[in-house]
Amino acid sequence: MKLLKAFLTLNICMAAYLGDYLVFKSRFSDSQVFRALTDSAVHASLGCLSSILFLSQEISFNNTACIFHIGFCTLLSSFIDVDHVFVAKSIYWKDLTNNKYRGIFHCTTFWLIITSILLTYSYIYKKINIYMLTWMIILAYTSHHIRDANRRGLWVYPFGHTPPFSKSLYIFLVAILPNILTVVNVYLKPDIYRHTIINYNNIV
Ligand SMILES: [Zn+2]
Image 1 (spheres, protein in one colour):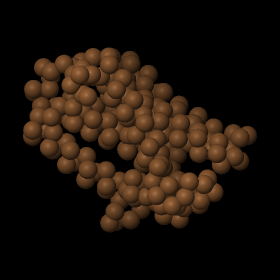
Image 2 (image 1 turned 180 degrees about the horizontal axis):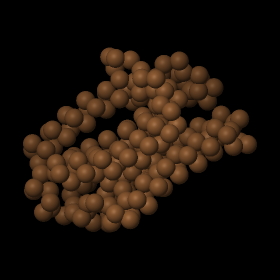
Image 3 (image 1 turned 45 degrees about the horizontal axis):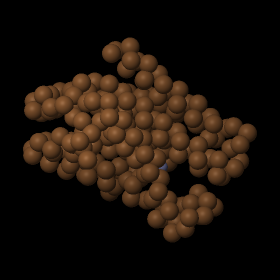
């Protein structure tokens, strides 16, 4: 299991490094459409790998439940960028890529509040499906925000933006965070969850 975690962590580093090269420095990078699509794919890959790493510790999940959670985290990691449409009030590439302001989904405080409420509620009322989906949301927004922080910093309302993260700091954080969250979940998970097998039927 430790080898699998190390392998996945290495894959996260490679996806971030090679993904950024593809988005910003490849010979197709002049195309706004190519950059938007590959950027979205890199966010999705980081969310996907982070959720696989997280769920590799979950013995209570069957295969279908794993696929559902990984799929949810992957899509959400990419979906966060949909707020560019809300801010630009347009669906045209040139408007989406020239936003001065960031949308609500890029505000770290917003997700911190939402996920804290959901985790507390599901922990107290023992709603295992909401509890696990909340961890997927946490993995999705942290990987997305840390990667974006390389260019624009983290937006921590009401304190404003941090300075942009260096490349090495962002890759280190995006790789180490799913490992830390996995340990936090292992220790925090209520006892009742340890004896519950999660399958697709009790998710939908
Ligand atoms: Zn973004």
